[in-house]
Image (tube, rainbow, N blue to C red):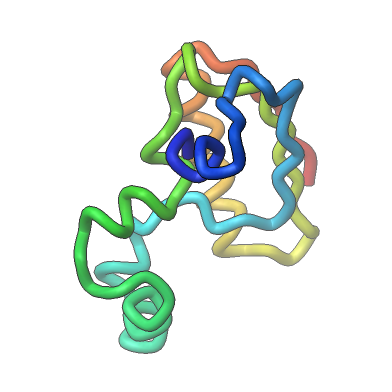
Length: 102
């Protein structure tokens, strides 16, 4: 998120790359998922959609703002693998270099 990087005097262009491990990259399933997941989302980020957009990386994928990504998942990260696939797909759609390993 360029906003968070700006708070420490950096921009996305200052990053050579990002290694992402077993991450939660979007809020799609969390907003409409189980009551526990929804509860955790709202507890961590509040109930405003604008705050969720700021918090999750998938909302900030842009060819001009993203460094290359390498996404890793543990073998049994079942629900997180779906998140990783969506994140990789979004990155590739926006022509951001990304690769993955499980």
